[in-house]
Image 1 (tube, rainbow, N blue to C red):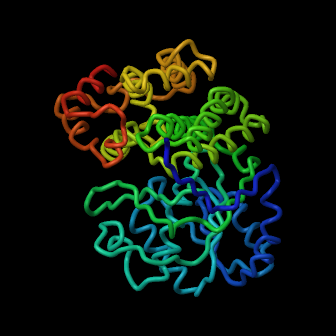
Image 2: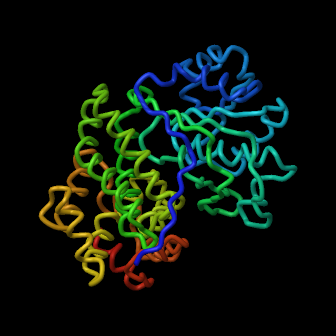
Length: 376
């Protein structure tokens, strides 16, 4: 008999054009003085200023100094502005980097400390910060419904997740129309990240019936709609399905955590500059095949693959590679900039983040090097 615990405390408000109801949500939640944490592109396009204007004075400032892989410094600068303006709430409007930075900044701002103290685990995270409404503009990280943020400590050269139940947003407003302006490269990289979240939630050691349901639904949507969203950016139906896939995958991996492909992605991003989703996709097909050969996983993963319309687990993995190729994503280690034996050894060495332990097949440095070498 199975024992499991499922939790998803974030209200999910989903639909095209939903951004328009943000002022009503702020009013209903009695939010009076807040900050809009957004992307530089949202400020350039004027969308951030429009959101601020429509808030009827409730949003008093905008912070947008956030890098694509948000740093501890970005988070501290954001927390500083929250303190200076004495903000009581935040609205985070942007992709995963924006949401990740905002979640941590909302907490850090309510303490007298810097982000590094919590990132290094010197200090425990013991209370909620100011409430945050999350409005994603990409279909990728599902940061709007999870406890996790991924930050980079540039001083110590560490990219890693930081997680706490106190990081949950108080509301997720998901408007697929906001993803239409995503460039094809962002659609590709964020969309393939959704697939990594889905498949890793399904095979991760912590999976359970409710996360399995969400993972399968999300993966199915990605296989059906990602290439359409990539080739036809204005196709609102495909965009909506990818937005649904993203948040549904979040409902799975938030509890199961990610696994080996994500562990491998951190050094690929940090040391070789491969965008996060693309970095996950480098090893995702290999791990799907490898885990499907494990005796007690084989039946599950092959059956999953067949329910999604593939002959077997290997055919599903091959389809991921076909999709990567169709979207111009990196296929080989050389594409990723891993050119020498020394590069490869460094990559192997830095791939053993804690989520590697969530993989059904136990990986050693030797077996991981072999897996990487097959990508040459």
